[in-house]
Length: 263
Image (cartoon, rainbow, N blue to C red; front, top):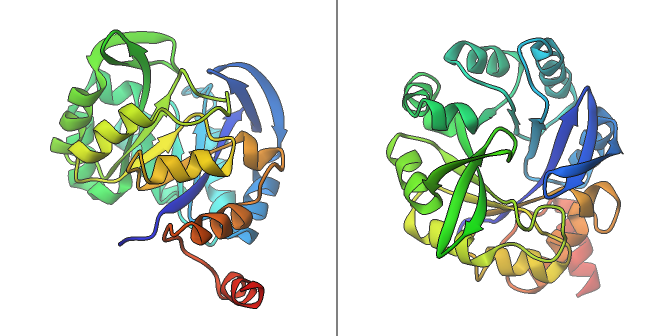
């Protein structure tokens, strides 16, 4: 079985990391470079940076961040937010990012997924899906969770995979920032319906929540922000706890040595 990934998420606004609840009520969480170094040391598998106020005017800030991150990080990182063209994907990858995350632009022009995968490789294209429970299903939202699209989440996920995306970043807007657990139902539906990896996002607050997302929810990875940014758990602590419960995770030699000494 492939190792499950633990991915801290850093929402970026005007060069700072912020965090809110259900996409509103943002508060400062620190400097992105400082937090990145911390998660690098804690053996995070990857990092995701989402420029939540992205625009063409501040694209230079995003490119500068990618270049600085590439100099200090030894783990893969993804950058998303306001990316709308192949040229912008090229700029961000050239600046140093391993992957790009697209959401609104993918819904507006699904061919961007296909063209991006063809030009840069499927492994480079992450499609972010912000979903909210509606009736018997879940609806996809765009523009930072502000606009409903009418798209059914499961159907859109299948379309995203068909067009060549390498993975899906699935965020439950209902659970985002609540720290009351991931939306296991829609996570499991999409994870079991697709062959590409699904990253569960929105709601992680306890060890149980992460464990459930990776087992009951069948997610390939879990993404979280608040519990890492504000020190509830370190990535290393979470990995050690998941390993004790039988979840395969990547451990550094130092973590393995510590776990053996504690056995």
